[in-house]
Length: 315
Image (cartoon, rainbow, N blue to C red):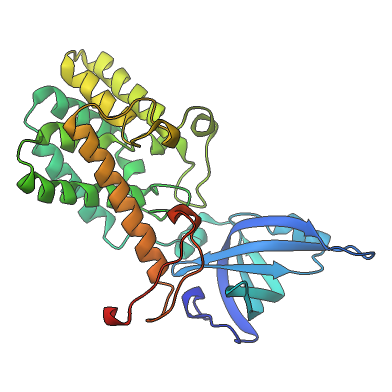
């Protein structure tokens, strides 16, 4: 069976097994309208858009998000990108053990990442920040281990949240060599907890979607309330509690990006910049992975709708 990443325009009768990550029903134009399905297939190497023309009622009822299927199709070029024209599709399954096989995973082992994240917690010397961070990390350990960092755009893969957080901590280490005036305890705890609200905002690693709480509240306010509740439970008071909440509330950097307050301390500004840098580098790398040397990507909405070029010198 061919992997999605290896499918090329012009390939005919391609047989594959994949999971449906998104599906929508449409109707053709003209006098003789018929149903069709727009499907996004994914496996552990990537995704591809597909069309199932003249979809039957059985197809419409059985082909839902999360379904694992065996299918066959032709790969065509559409709007400067690959698209599959489906010939056949069957063997629908929703077993979680099968779904996991088709999910993109973090480039690091999850156990190793969690071990390193624990080591960063141990480096927090401020007692109040240490206790708060350790408490929230341990109480959400299993979700932090497997959750994606987003439903789309960046680090949207199994253990993406842990990988994103660890990458940010490593960047912070490097920057504190340049800016030793930064408070390491505040920056470490802010990075470790800045996206912990994603464990409530998102449904999980398999086809992540927004929960009701995620839609109504968003991960920023969820994380801030988690810190406040933990401080109340542990009877921790003081400036540190307020500053940690500020780090979380301001980490998107601007009101229009979802932060209710702007960064007002050095560490909050640095957290915002490191978060943004790591997310954008991941989006660049994801786009570059789909290109051959000398090729240009299609426009990427999350990167200001720009195109990305893969230099030949990268070889």
